[in-house]
Length: 346
Image (cartoon, rainbow, N blue to C red; front, side, top):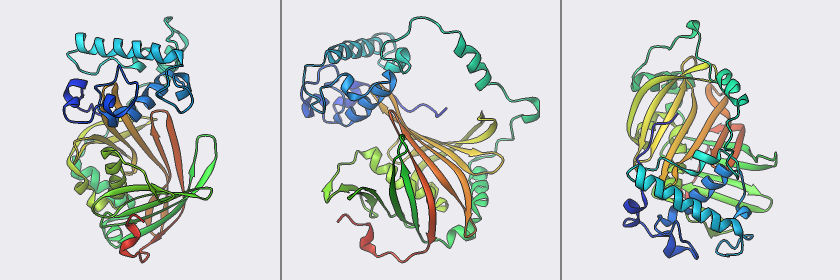
């Protein structure tokens, strides 16, 4: 599991950010929440209850007051915030998921079947798979660089062009292309029919647009775009974090993983997991604090293949609460010539 990020309470954040009640109509229980958390909190509630937006809202008119579940949701939010405030010193300890666990109506009866499944899924490693020695941060990163193909090969790559497909949970696919440089610039284009959604980082700022219209990015979303470039060019990985600290190995999915606890420049906490046998990065989880707990952004890296002497994850799965998608990489070209304005907003 990722290490805990600092909790944020309504009272701590209200003075620093625009209030949700000032930006959105008909917000009551969450009126003092930072407005930028609204989308994340709604996604977390949907995932916790296993429902979609229209369970509490009328179509896309989120301010409308004719959905009966909306008032119930407000009561539940008031209860949750009150419990945390009165019993846990304002720390976000109880969330929607604490009770709901993916059900719109919490089940008050203990189910016995999952206990057996849980014991099987989380069985302890055998004596023959005892925990490996714990290398320090430098050792884990050095193993990672070697596993990818070596520092010399990586250093020779100044830019790359990735072609692949974005796969939605229902199996629908969209063509996707990425251009990235060792200097930290990036551009990604996803085609939804004739509509191109493009995001990038030009060395100064991150941006996103669709059909020439700008799409606002929250600070953590902008930083996520930059961090992906650090993963692609790992010799400069330390530049994307203010702290990287090795932790104890963890047993997950029948293998031992080396763990690095990381802090981004913004203060967002991240956990990096490396396969102890291969040295390769297999998972990354960023935790963004909200008034209803941690909003996690998880990336799984798998199906590594050698492309011109470098190991590349050809299946990359992204997941945030209530949303998942997968990128299947079909080709990678190293050192294409890219104009400087290729990474600029257009």
